[in-house]
Image (cartoon, rainbow, N blue to C red; front, side, top):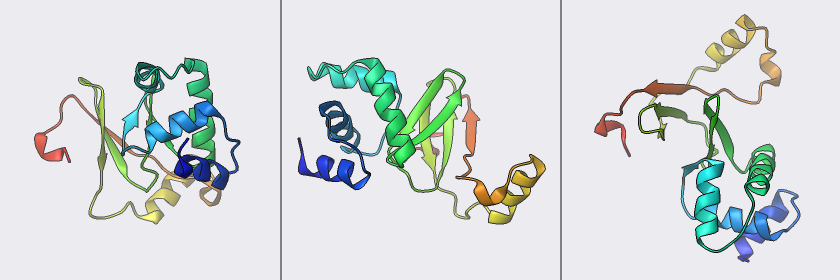
Length: 144
């Protein structure tokens, strides 16, 4: 168990369990977009046996606490994003790849409020807004 993982779990008020530490250490290695199934396969290749149900439950807790962002791109495809800073995404429906987009101009807050009002949401209680662009293929220029 790394000190960084244990400290992060404590900081977010989470109990220290081996699955949480293993998953957090894997996720903290680098910025990534990962599905629960990809995480399951990667973790279990390292002979750390963690069930898929435990991975889903742990990811749900990490999202609730703000350690990860959940990005639903298709009804049965959810990615977990280690980058919790505000940004947009582009999803390649052919390769199933998700990449980050950082526009030069941020989404105007007035537009978020206007959309919330149009759809009957209270803009004061919105947790955030997610914009995902869908494409059949990426231009190499978009890749970072």
